[in-house]
Length: 227
Image 1 (cartoon, rainbow, N blue to C red):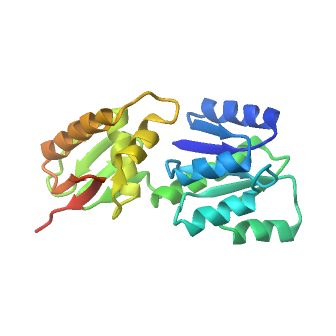
Image 2 (image 1 turned 135 degrees about the vertical axis):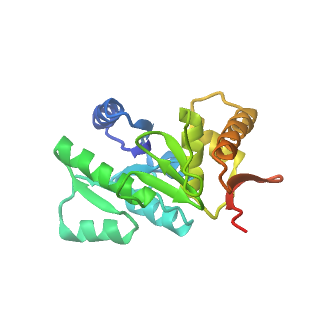
Image 3 (image 1 turned 90 degrees about the vertical axis):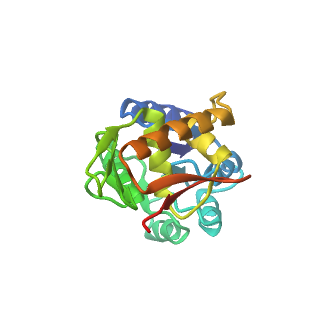
């Protein structure tokens, strides 16, 4: 799961990033509101951890702008403020949850797990679209019509996860490259095409009617050809 941490306190950010990576999260970090909003608008994250007091733009402004642009990524607000009005302001700006500093590590991780489940809209660790079910624990995809299943590589799994989580939308090659390979990667767009081909072949192997369609000049989307 890919997280964005927007936090201007360097020590806090380093400690949080280290903790989250130990918990197997991928973490990108921004230290101010301007770069934080740019990263949020890339829409490649599963969860955003957002401090309120930031230079450039505060957390409330970032959350409002994200929701205004249709970005539905769950947001966990972190702040030293504990007043009820501040919590209400955070939630009204578009945050999904609110955690006051200092906090207990176990509570932070529990809240992230809850937001992660909410983001994939499944309590049993699966994602579904058309006639396929993606098992998030086993990294496997199953066709509900044929009963066949197959294991997926990490990149194949993440491609299907991202497409299912954004079903009904066309995802650009840039979005997919950023989501799957990250900002620091030298991956090129042909990497996306290669792994799309691998993923399509696995869907064909299990005889799924769900397929990944290329939208010329734009990107890719999931379609269910059930007729």
